[in-house]
Each structure stands twice: as C-alpha cells, then as structure tokens.
Image 1 (cartoon, rainbow, N blue to C red):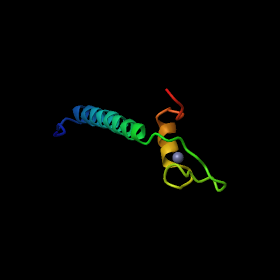
Image 2: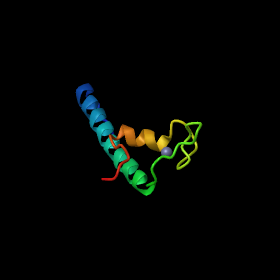
Image 3: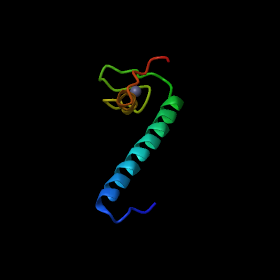
Image 4: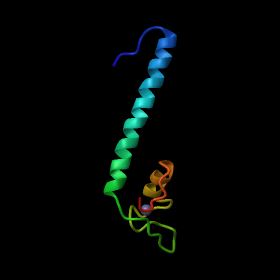
Length: 73
Ligand SMILES: [Zn+2]
C-alpha cells in the first residue's frame, strides 16, 4: 500500500489507513479477550490474580477501552 503524492489525497489515505488498522486491531483484541475469559480477581494489593498480576490489570484496561465491562453478554 503506497501513499499518493498529492497532500490532500495523502491525508485521506493516511486517515483511511489508520481507521482500517484501528478496526483490525480492535477485532484482534476482542478475539484475544474472548480467549482470556476469566473475570479479574484482585488480591488485597489490588493486583489481578486472574491475569497478569499487575495493577491496573491490562485485561481490564483493554475491556474498558472497548466499552466492555467484562460482564456476561
Ligand atoms: Zn484482570
């Protein structure tokens, strides 16, 4: 995929490229989150024991960014 020379066309191409890329990344992230099904379980230090033992949990952050509260559909 090659960007055109014209500045306006180039800006449109750039916007389309990144919109398409964001859509693909969102699909991939949703698929990964479906595989990583367990809900967060925080210990007394606020670290998620269901995922990667960090705070805030990266799975919770990804679900939040996608507008998914992590509840059952
Ligand atoms: Zn978690």
